[in-house]
Image 1: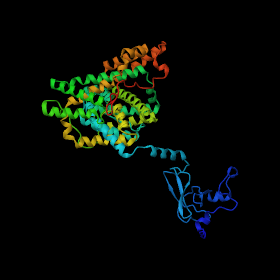
Image 2: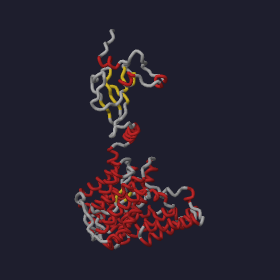
Image 3: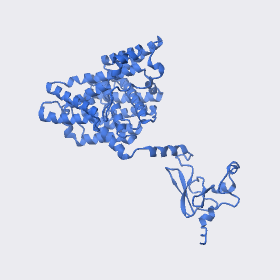
Image 4: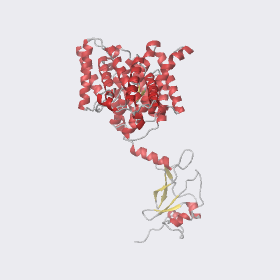
Length: 519
């Protein structure tokens, strides 16, 4: 068989006789030849043809040899230049393009790793759906705790989830209208009304941005372990006490006990459906059929029927307004950052990845500012829903965005059904959340024997101050001061071993779909 005649493209890319197809170390050390400077490095191809590693040229640049037979094109994701040779296009490595025209192989490598390691979009959307189903009853419960309409809490959770999906630092972490923020906001709503809470939400977000800019947000990750335990235990006690106002009759008590039993059984059985959703559905059926006068969600206020709109705080512009709102705003900023950064650290350990905590602090501040200007209540990261999202397969920002979108879609579509939900079902959910939030190891005889006395004292002081003032920030601040005093006196603590950065682990086993801690 006669050999095929070389084409014009092959002759143009054929190397000179003095060059070797395989470059050795000596050829690399001597530097590029004139031909290599003009045409690029010679690279052998698997089919025996020859192509050249070409340098990136400016648009419209023409070489001395004239234009190539077919135009070269660039794959922006893989950062390679595809140069036609031997009648076909072969991938030739070239510097990737950037917005400023700089060589950046590290960016291309990170993009390829991120795309290769990301779960399918279908998995992310399903994880968001499961998380949204668990969010609905708890978000309504937290709205009732804060003293606002359920519509406010649901729309706030939607806005917060959508914003944090884009600006947050921890992918797959779910943030919404949380219980800890509702407890801080409740006194302000009772004394001054909802409009003051809107202003406090915006001002709290601004303070979070300031803390992130100053680098102080990361210091909140280094709270003493005793103060962290007191924070968690005080939060659990406040949530439990807040539910007592809704137990108004014997039928409600029976419904609550039945809901608690269903939630405990669902946790023990490890069902895939969120136990809170099962409990809410069963108690709704019983309340509609057997208990005609049971309080419902519709009695607490209205529910959303569409997207939220812009809402500026309608408050008097005066110094008295600022002084009335400022203490609550400071508490919201501190509590939100503490819970969000601890949750981000927990998700980091579960997914074996790292996330920028400073960016997460920025994201929390931006989300609170945006949510406030849409007439919402403050929010932060939700530990239980974040773990549920990760367990369901969520690893990226799509799952967080989907959780907020599914939440609004389900509430709008099931608007008539949401109004007949019995309040007893939400009370049962919050009681179980409070019980699972409390760190029981910190008060058991074995835990008291193995824990330093100073750490136990800090935990007790923090818990008492939180319960007495109904303010989580005050308790954490007093606990940190007590810890500093005891350290000054030489009292030993677990923080001497470097364990202060880790939040307390739950004591009871957790089934899929069950909140780990109060949200």
